[in-house]
Length: 492
Ligand code: GLN
Image (cartoon, rainbow, N blue to C red; front, top):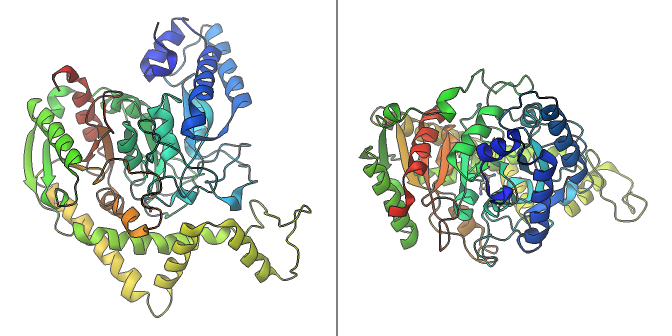
């Protein structure tokens, strides 16, 4: 029999309801596998063994009673450490939250708990989701499961590596500028960034609130669709979440309908700087889609070149206000002696300075300072207000192209996974790895990274291609993705 940790959601579900194995057995097998693998990969910051076994016994009790369970019951998930699970640590890989335990469940976690899903643990990430390699974690560097000398991407690198190495069936990440899609591409898994408003952000530690979204990482598009369907829709604790029901069209796309969708290739995304291997793999994906009968057209998104600059103004501005709440007094406390207190100071400002100085890493500090600068009175119009106008132009570019095509196809990242340490001293180089994913967040659109070759099918480092859909049309990109992965991969 195949190992449970290699199976997709539907296969685990089948095994569970046919009583081939119990939920406790599933959890056991995953933890054993994690024990073997995670020492070298380092995807998890924390394992939630007690809770996971408890959740699993609950699922088994329901099955024992002969009751029906949902598709996600007993399915083991890895959760990025900036998403709150009540009573478990939630550090966002920052020293400033080192001792913090979440006091409530994130909106997505409540929905998943109701569905009977199991949380194996919390995964490593770049501190407060700022980065593209997971090297900005205050605690450790996660390795790429395909090559331990390479980064897994970021900031959801722990979640992507966990799924890529079969240490979780599926995972949750968050994406502000590419943090689900880029690590998915680097680790050979599927990563979906939903439309802004499609998934509740309640209980997600805010990085840049107008850009952040939670989304699934999975071995297959189908698994991503199943997970998305459960976490999607309105949540009373996030007023920006939208009243929408994602139904059957998400998990059971109709091939005839899907094949009518037109796909656009924006010339601004196929540029110099795209490495050869990425180019070859993306072309292979395009060929496969053509062989499925899709009409593919050239399009233009003329303001693409301004996206990165606009993002690093808007995002840092939002970061600087969102991170103001971490003063080291609320949420957790860092002490410089064993008494749990900062010594050598007696005024509040000094405490804040010391706490923030000890608690935040370089990248967080850089962004807080930049963001404070772009929002300051004399510069607000020149930077922040202007960046918002550019954001609008980028959105209009997409609106215009969606008059011609239904879906846009692009690379996810200009390169495959890079070497650990290669870009840590050059933030601008690091920022460039998100050049193809950032416009999607600025426009609030759904985007998915799909491995060009099926899960486990890469001999060399994996490459993903990106499909971008219209607002709330996750069904289109998930539909194309599901057709794509049904293609006989032997021919390629
Ligand atoms: N890598 C990008 C950044 O550093 C995106 C991060 C994200 O999506 N959370 O901002």
